[in-house]
Length: 508
Image (cartoon, rainbow, N blue to C red; front, side, top):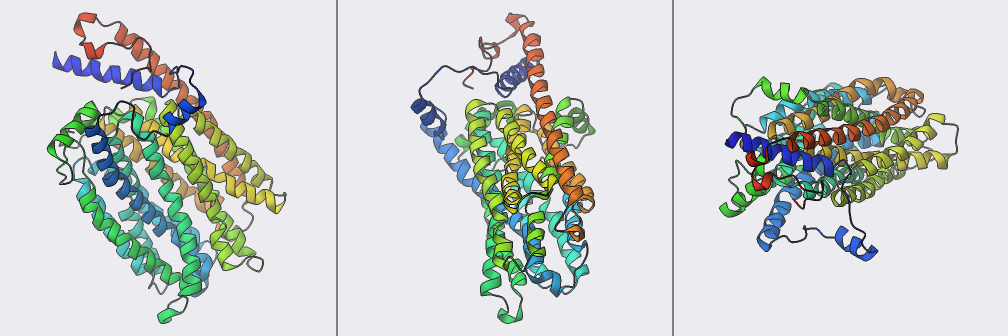
């Protein structure tokens, strides 16, 4: 009987979640000031002081580390492009598509280890696994500063990608394990913006290193960039050993009381259940049995294809016309794209948390991206139009937080399926991007990437179709599950399992 009740509870949760995130939730008319006040509230209305304190501690631990970790990984990955346009190409005698090959060598281990690394987090304490990996990739970032030739740099970038592979999906896994559905989107939004912030900071850091450290102790400015990035990475990794609370089911955090850990388990419900200790193919079979895996992986793949033109293509354009643009401009101008993505991601995430409808901002941002993609595909436009397209193309990055939020919410009752789905999205998306990058954006074709700009216009358009498909399937699932539960005998259901009269109106 307990198993039947558990099944009913998960189904009821799925109905409520699916309806809320399909955008079917109805709301009463409220004044502009009431809506503004509601949108700026960080904690949910009616939350107790003890639960607010718990959330404050979780934010201080989880969000601080995951955002800093994402920031440092983006810094350690983006620094390659900044170093390339700031003297590394000449010092290491790079030519042709060497920059593409360095990216591929970095991305292959990043993709291969991502899914097993994410699944490993359901078996090994994340508080040990994630900081250890960060320490090691920081070491190889530091060693990159002293590379004497291309082959040595290949080896170091390979290892940075291998140990950095667990950072993104691991952070998504941790955030999705501790927060309830009305809380996830804005936190994933804050996490998502830490990556473009890291890319922005890399540009500013390279400019400062080139201007202030170039030649100091016999080291070129681009070498100092790698050194500074590693110095930033090390303390973040050490902090992770103390900050990561593992999952609610396995937490032994010294920063949380036993009552707070128990409260977290009750808040999350089925999602806090301990996973099996034996790796099983059933997890993969379960993940592949529904539509979610196929559509979310496809959508993430289109996202990764679309974002290929961001930053690097603009940097190579500016480098090609280096007589017209200074080293500072070459490093700093592409950061405007990241600034656009930061602002749009924060707004979109807040909107999603308040409306339970990620489709609207996701579709709107993709539509804007498509406009910019068509401009660059046309190419024979003014320089101002090109800059507009490069800058506003950053809007597509809002999908990083929105798709992960959507996927995490729809699998909130299954820890292993969530790990498999989010790991697959990032892994396969990056794998496909790694294979296509040298074909559609070969560095040797700078500054005009004809194939690349046409390709990203196509993938942006396909993304629009995929988003509509996901929304339709979410609504279809909600309808089927609602009908299924309504057909159950009422006497077999507990009071908590009753279907709300107005689907999506549950306060959770």
